[in-house]
Length: 171
Image (cartoon, rainbow, N blue to C red):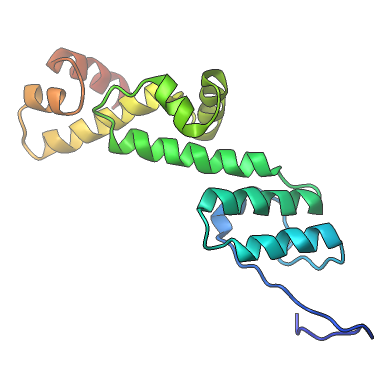
């Protein structure tokens, strides 16, 4: 696009560059030209808020794209962001016994919704995701030569046999 105005009333252009990962799996054109006033306003507001928290950006951007038609709603985009935040929390605190109540509160959704959405996004419910993270961390520690009993405790398992059971199942 060469930003050439063909209208007698003048033109203005808004370019919004966003990470491609936000739109993985979406069928979007490389660029969108529109005269829809609602869509233009949504993009304008999104541009103003790009320095705000990423979740707010996702919410506005999702609304703007939903107005364009054929794309996931705003709430879906915000939910993806929240699920990624939950997965990072589980990875960083895999040795802790984080309750589902805490995860659901952190994500701003109900427990059943969190389990369904998380499972759809990552292929595992949060509990099994955490166990998988624990086993991965234990594996790294064991390869470094640490004692299996100490490793089991360090990554959040009750004892070495608990670690061994999950380790055999997942590796």
